[in-house]
Length: 448
Ligand SMILES: Cc1ncc(COP(=O)(O)O)c(C=O)c1O
Image (spheres, protein in one colour):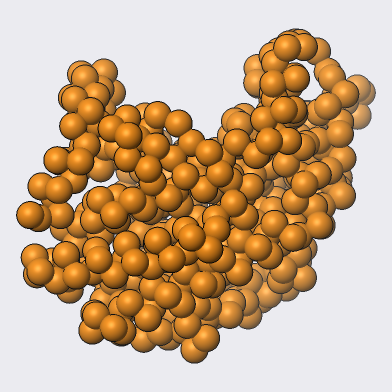
């Protein structure tokens, strides 16, 4: 039986639901990442480190709410806070005390957060951060790093290349694409040249602080440090997009782990404890452009948003942040991730398959075909990969994903988001599932 035929056999209800969904949603899904060929998995419920699909299969979950569930599914304190708040009201159309508590926790935990505003998503947070930076500097251009992801707002979509200027996304006004300069990460010379040559027009530099796609392409610490020095010297606003890394890499995010404080930070996911929410935070003089002004002749930046700091997200977020502030959950999740990474790397070796699993903190990435392994079996230690990961065809990555689901493990794309709820039993199951999937892929000659 092939990986594909076993997937089809194990998931008949998912298959029929996805056929229904195909008539409603493009590709039958509501988030690109949930799309799976030949059909997506439909979940019915979740608890701790596990979720159950509509066919009754129990699955160790490494999607973890797209990275929002550092505490695992349904942490009892978070659930109790949300239930209690739901009884009091889901939307007051007014300020409420819980949003202050939530904001105070962000301020206390995140080094750059002198002031902040809550949003409904990470996409909204990066949109607002860039607008604030443009208004603050009076400049228009944004420097982004190739393949770094910041949500789907216009300013951060498409990859206009510094040399070739090739947009990759239709539907964007030319002017917006022209307002981005995209350079490769880890090339300090290109960074220095771009920032110095165009400093008169560059408002901000935004980056994922552990590298493109939550560290799938790891970034060099020295590069980030140089970016901080240059942006400070040239009056460019440095924005760390910590939508994924915030509260995960350390309580105060990658900025705390690095000891590098950006001017602004965007957050989402863990900040709101698994409910919808985001946050833009940073220097008071930049954030205060949102304040109402009277008579000083300067325009303000408006910030409405029906669901900003909604009471349910405030309840989940403030409870979650209070629990994770001491760093013990991040440490536990990272220790578990290291054990999984080492075990998966051993499976690569034992099965004589070229490949490497690597990670930072509790985020792991699987690089099929990359024939080097991290010195400690897990991490490159804030360094870029020693050589580029080879391009893997879609069939192989798809087979890996489906094969792991067949074995009871749901990956986040080509990686794993580990939570503090994952157990030793999950570690053992995951490594064995990986070993069996590699064997199944070898049998089908699906490996690079
Ligand atoms: C680094 C980064 N920035 C921004 C976003 C967008 O956040 P959201 O999906 O909440 O709009 C994401 C989403 O995964 C992200 O990973």
